[in-house]
Structures are given as C-alpha cells and as structure tokens.
Amino acid sequence: MIELYHCPSARSFRCLWALEHLRLPYELKLMAFPPRASMPEYLRINPLGTVPALRDGGTLIIESAAALQYLAAKYGPALALTPEEPDYGAFLNWTHYGETSLTVPLALIVRYKLGPEKLPQAVTDYTENFAARLALVETALDGREYLAGERFTIADISVHYALDLAEFLGLGGQFGPNVAAYAARLREMESYAATRRAQKVPRPA
Image 1 (tube, rainbow, N blue to C red):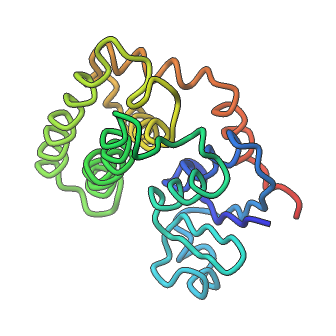
Image 2 (cartoon, rainbow, N blue to C red):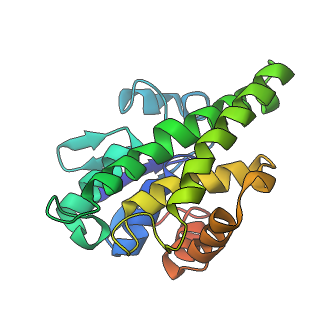
C-alpha cells in the first residue's frame, strides 16, 4: 500500500489530492509541522525532514511535483498528458511551475513573515516576485478552465496548492479574475473536499 507522510496543508497536500482523486488505497502518516521537530524519527525516512515522503513498495519520493508525476504515470494516466498531445509541454511546465516558480517565493514569505526572523522588506520583495509569476497563470487561463489539455491534471493540482497557500498568506487580492475563478472552481471538486477531510484524521492501515 502507498504510504504518504503528510503535514496538514503543506506541500504534501498535492500528493494527497492526487491519491484522493484517483481513489487509490493509501496509508496516511499525519505529522505536525515541522516534522523534523515533532517527529525526529521521520529523519530516518527523509533526512531532509520535509514533506512529502511518498513510499510505494521500494520507491521513495520526497519532491511533491515528482510524486505527482509518479502517481499519474503509474496509476492515473487521466491526470496526465502524453507526449503526443499538443499541450504536453504546457502540462510539464505547469506541473513544475506550481512548485518552483509559485510556491518557492511563498515559502520565503512564510519564513520571513511568520517565522522568528521577521524581514518586512523580504516579504515585500517576494510578494512582488510572486505577483509577477502569477500573472503568467492569469494569462494562461484566459478562455480556459484548466491549464493543459482542456481537462483536470496534476498540473492543476500543483498550481492550485500555491494558490491556496497564497490565500492563507492574505495574497488573494493578487489574483486576477481568471485565477480567482479557477481557484474557486477547483475547490468545488469532490476530490478537493475529500482531501481536506482526509488530512484531519489519519486513515487506518
């Protein structure tokens, strides 16, 4: 059975959403954030002490976008595009853009706004950086419901997590009309609601 080490609403939310959407059996290892402090034994699984850690038999993945690609390729091809599809490049781009281009500046805002070391100028700089990167999503969604292939894929899961984090940080005002409608639309999906419910209580093995 797939095991997912997860902190509520952390990057591992992406993996949990994919598991719920695909209705795969899994065991959820729910931990308090940050896990390297709340569960030191977790470092034996992921020495970085970060989430996710997704284990499927002998396979262990600790990057959320890579875990999404793994789950889609092995268990849920409907959540991915193939190289033969015209939007395949966009699909790959948005899957990784959600993490590297959108979530990274938000994580730095979390660090310098909510962490012990307060750096207001850094928060301002990274907020501007996020807004510039978000503008590409606004443009990409013009006339589209999803980011690639005219259907819901892991690219949407990846990007939408960043939008959730942005709203948590009070940055929802940065959303243009396309992004705002997209964020609301995906939150209405049953698999999203199931993911929110699932992370509150660990599933039995």
